[in-house]
Amino acid sequence: MVYFGPVVFFFVLGLILIIKGADWFVESAVWMADMARIPKVIMGATVVSFATTLPELVVSSFASWDGHPGIAIGNAIGSTICNIGLILGVCCLIKPYYIERSFFIYKGSTMLGIGFLMLYLLKDNTVDRAEGIALLALLLLYIVLNLIESIFKKDLLPEIEVSTGNWIINVIKFIIGAVCVMSGAKLSVDNGVILAQILGVPERVISLTMIAIGTSLPELITSFTATMKGYQGISIGNILGANILNLLMVIGMAATINPLKIAPQVKIFDMPYSLFLMMVLLLSGIIDSKIERWVAVFLLVIYISYIIILGVIFFD
Image 1 (tube, rainbow, N blue to C red):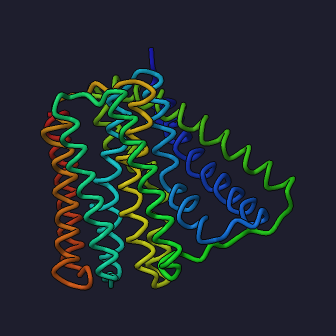
Image 2: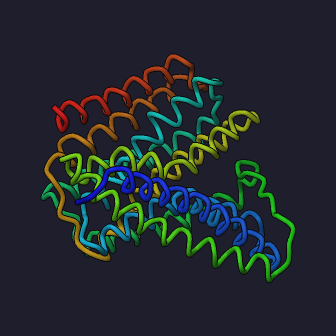
Image 3: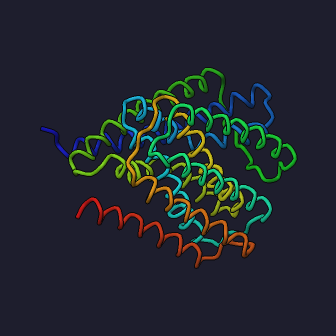
């Protein structure tokens, strides 16, 4: 007999380990890169961009390895929905976002194009290994273009704070952080599966909601902090970049590990919903040079409606 309380406890514990572990892992990695005299512009375009998507990558990779494709792809797509609808909605509600339009349109269009590519790949309800490798190849191209862009636009990158310490301390933090992320992902996936069984819902529903929100907390913390400090460009850049990495890196890696056979609802409901949010965000940036509070309210309403629809469908 499986008890609900312990399952929820270990599920939440897994998410906490992922978030704190990712923090230690990236902080120590940045410190070591700085000590190795790797330019901050390179770190900003690679390590920092990779940082907030690390939880999704590890969770989806473990889910794919363990044969849970619903969690693997649901976590990635759910995070894109959460990033725009919930995180950007909350942050823009606190303070309207002024954007650099050319940068925003370029990144937003890239995100939307990759979103439509993902919808096309889902046409047969499968993302196979070859398609996963193709997504990773596109990821490599995206990173190269991002590096080239960052060299000429250093002012668009966040200042990277490097913690004090020595090699021993930071190597230990690097190892502990990696272990926490791995073990946390394992706990979250295993107990997420059990939680889905207890509640009588598909695994993808748990991954689209609870796991997606949990693994998106680094994006929430980063975006909220940037918003409060007045660095909205960093915040929205983080969200757009995270969504691109979720579709290319997270799904690409998961599909390369194991082909992802998914439920038809992902193709006809979840991914189109994500694309709708992307289009609303991109259009708001094209029409105006800032994202107003009314747009933030609209994004939040779309996200809440999505959660309600999932609840009506699977808990009725």
